Image 1 (tube, one colour):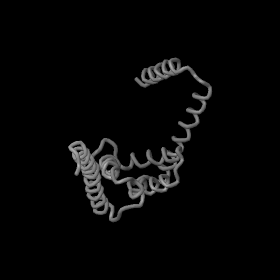
Image 2 (cartoon, helix red, strand yellow; image 1 turned 180 degrees about the vertical axis):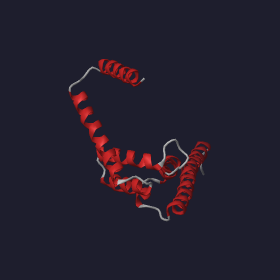
Image 3 (cartoon, rainbow, N blue to C red; image 1 turned 120 degrees about the horizontal axis):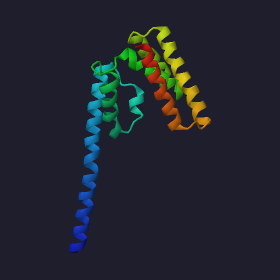
Image 4 (tube, one colour; image 1 turned 30 degrees about the vertical axis):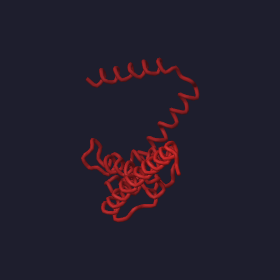
Length: 157
C-alpha cells in the first residue's frame, strides 16, 4: 500500500506528465492549423516549414504572412522582395537568392531593378568592410554624415 507521501508524489508526477503533454497537443494543433493555412494560401506546404519544430510553425507562418505576403504594409512586394534578395546575397543563401529573385519578378521588379538591388547590397557590404576594418570612429562618421546631408539639403533649396 502506498503511503501518503507516496500517493502525493505519484499524483505530482501524474499531474506533471499531464501538464507536459497538454502544451505539446496545443502546439500540435497550432501547427496543424498553420499547415492548413499555408496549404490554402500557397497551394502546398513547402518543406522549409517542415524543418521547424511544431512549436515554431505557427509563429513563422504568421511572420511571413503578416509582413512578406501582406499587401497592406508600408512597403509593397516590389520593394520588399528585392530587399530580401539583397540580404540573401550578403548572407549568402542560395535558397533565399532563388526564392527572392522569383518573388521580386512576380511582384513586378525588372531585371535592371533586381541587378540594382544586388549592386546596392554589394556597395553597402564594401563600405561596411572598409569602415569596420579601418575602425573609423563612429561619432566622427555620424557628424560627417549629418554635415553631408545638411549641405546637400541646403544646396537643393
